[in-house]
Image (cartoon, rainbow, N blue to C red; front, side, top):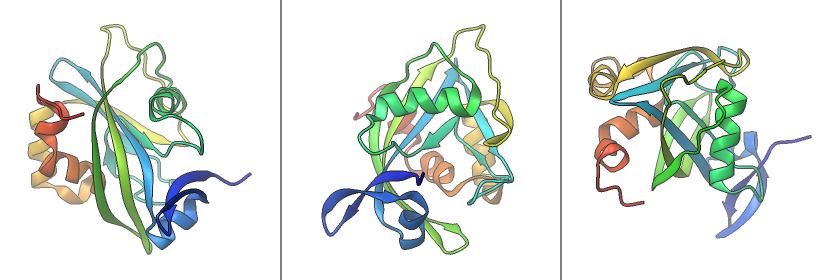
Length: 176
């Protein structure tokens, strides 16, 4: 079965195969989640088997909603699938749009709903090795500084979030 995601084709939202979306740089729907514990954010290093940006550090999780799936349901599903996280329900913080070259002739042109969740003290994280090499809890401001110092170690979207949208995502006056 192919992975069909919502993408705009000739101004109309249609289900399009995920790889095709990235190869053609089509504008498409996406979801990004940040799980926090106070000022610390859970980040992941993408598995080497990922078809783009393998081995780079990213936010807690990100994906594309399936055709017909709500962004909120997608966020909960992806936390479970990528990190084994259950029992938390992220709140939508903002909607952003960006375009980034992700290598190998692929482009992410995403209209992304960004979600934020506070982790309970006893949060269990069980990374799926097909998706995630490792995870780390990092202070948000240390993360922003590290992204600025060593951008090549991070996914293009995490760089964009930290450089251009940090206050919109993590600030008290989110526009979402």
